[in-house]
Amino acid sequence: MKNNITKPSAKMSTLQLSAYVGIENNLHWNLDVIFKEDNQANRNQTAIENSNLIAKLAITSFI
Image (tube, rainbow, N blue to C red; front, side):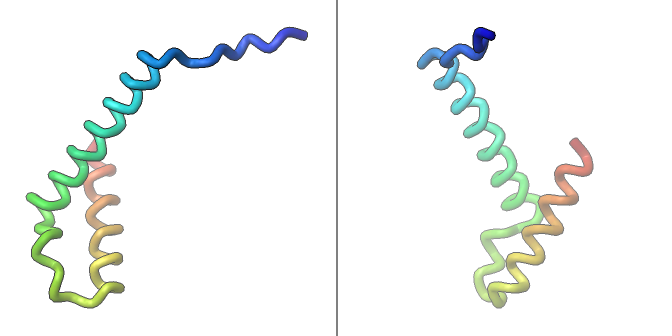
């Protein structure tokens, strides 16, 4: 049985990486603008992580 999986080309890998980075940048922009994540530096780490999780759940529920 021959394996039909082909190695992705460099161009395809670049396009996939670019799409992923765009999604990540959009997510971080939303987290910063909507949930003001950059202003949370004075809170304790556990509160920041919990807030981040809730914010990501809220954003992904609207996609």
